[in-house]
Image (cartoon, rainbow, N blue to C red; front, side):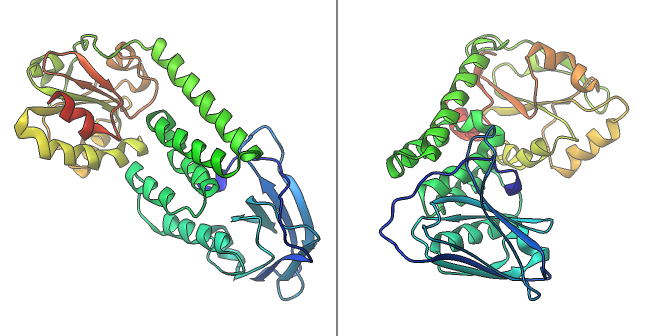
Length: 349
């Protein structure tokens, strides 16, 4: 995931530092390989800025030297076929690291001379070695960022897949970055990205088939046992209508939280109605996923028509997981309350 950072362009740095500024690497298994250092930013339409090209010696050692400080920002170091991303703060003078070419992309390196580089590497190592990155876990990693710029990059990388649900996090990161680096391209590009995201969300809401406050269309489909279950039969309860599928990794990652909330509030009038978008002939995979993920509620239905699912068309579902919180009167109370499900649930429960 961290290897998919968007490309950007360089910005000047103001510093009272003088003399030579160096980045030195000692990389096992990198004998005589070429090294390319580039600076990256948020704009995906802008090519990376090449900083230097050098070669490792027979011991895998290289040095990049320049008269000006390395700008505050994100960098990509390419050695042979391996890439390593890291950050500098614009005040680093003599930075060095040691590592192995085979684990360079996981930032398993020993760093000296840069607290920012060290901080960034530590967080990446935790992400690589940790379990699934849920929104809650992602926000913990983001909070560990040692600068507003680092926090903005982790916000984009770890919450970007479901950015629409985390618009406030993006806005907060943008505000902090603008205050810290007001004249930088990093701040302006991130601000533009957030503005575009907000515009897209508003456009999607205006085109939405289902809106908050409207009655929830009924769904009647068979479950794994062949018994037909209807959404309307749950009127009087607060219901989470959850579109998912056994093949959908983000859905499977979200399931433990849904199970947790269900067990906590099922005795207070909360239920879940799950609609699977599994493929034709994949009933066994659907059933296995229900068991594996501990989806203990009874309301599981599917027409096994993949993206041709009739309920998905009715609800305007174009991606999964997609959820709708329905109040006791059968009206839509919230759309896609995945990361703040419990908060939204308590409003209507």
